[in-house]
Length: 239
Image (cartoon, rainbow, N blue to C red):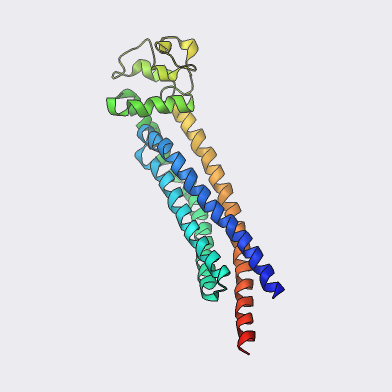
């Protein structure tokens, strides 16, 4: 009995961490959605899907974790077995996804995406359309950048139409007319700033996935032990 309780406590502990990570992914995805949408307007529309994927994965983790909690509290070996099987599938998918991402990262698709991002950003600056202006300004303010490759892109933008100034959103301290003074603006291009942001996010997501994977492996092992103990306890009760 004590052994079963011990396994249950450890299982609930690991599963609670699993649940917390799911809730965190949902929160991060929801908070970052507007940022990725603005980046998508500036550098490619598909980037907003990253936030959607984070939310979907978070919801899936929460539902699976709740299944494990219910199975543990009810001492239901069938629900625990289902939870363990799903968790094993998730671990395998994570391993295959990580391997596939590593392979594609080093090959043509990533380079094409990189080239597409550069072309999109330059085109958006060149065609400073009214429907994109808010997103462009928000990107420049948020990432403390100016233009696509550099602030000089604005001087060549026909839609902007002011070869002696940049938008005020390029300024270190934003105020009306500050874009006319080169000493008060950010000189770094937004393409570089966005790539640094995405790379940092990628490293963070990779670290979280590794931590989740380790927790999931322990969760599977403890879940198997708990499931076996529940079945043994039921057989002893029947005898």
